[in-house]
Length: 267
Image 1 (cartoon, rainbow, N blue to C red):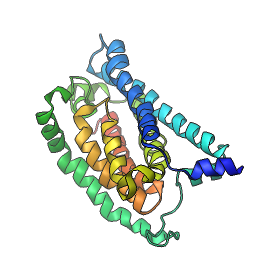
Image 2: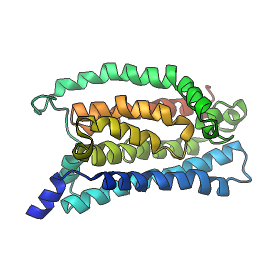
Image 3: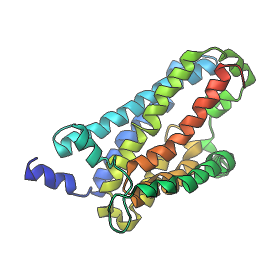
Image 4: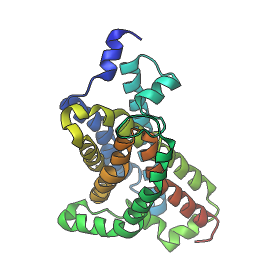
C-alpha cells in the first residue's frame, strides 16, 4: 500500500463528507420509498403494495453495500477480505482502555439484547405514536408500514405457503442489518467521524442513522434511539462493527420467525 493511500485511510472525514455519504444513502431510499414505490404500487392490493415496497427498498439497501465497498476501495486501493475487515472494523471486540482484543467482552451482548427487546417489543409503538403526535405529517400511509400489513388477518391468509415472500424478506434483512446499513454507518462512517464530533461521534452517528430513514419517517425517533444507544455506542466502545451487526440483526431474526410462522399457517 502506498503512503498516500495509507494517509487517506487514516484521515478523518470532514463534516461535508460525512453529510455527503449520509445523503448518498438517505436520498435514494427516500426516492424509492416515496416516488418509485407509489408509482409501481398504484393499483395493487395491500399485499402487492407491500411486496413492491420490500423489493424497491432492498435495491436501496444493496446500493448501501455497494457504496461501502466503493469507499473501502477508494481509500484502501483493493477489496481483499483483510482490507475490508480492517477498514470496516469487522474484528473481535477490543478493550475500551487498551485497544487489545478481548473475546470476553462479547458477554456485553447479553444486557444489550435486553435493551433491544425493550426498544422493539415494549417501547416501539409508543415511540412511534409520540413522534407522529409531534409530526403528524410523518404518519405512515396505508400499505407502507410492514408491521401493519403483516398484522392483517386477510393478508396473513394470503401468505400461507408463500415461501417466496419469506425468501424475499431474508434477502432484504441481510442487506438491511448486515451488508447495508451496518457496514455503511457503523463500518465506514463511524470510525471517520471523530475528527468532527470528538467523543460524541457515536451520538452523531446514531442521529444521522435515525434521520436517514426518510423512507419511513414515522419510525425516526425509534431509529435514533436504537442507532445511538444500541448500534453506534457498542460499535464505538468495543471497536467492532460485529457488535452492532449482531444487535441490529435481532429484529431481522424476529421478523424472519414471524413470517415463517405466517407462511406455515401458525400465526
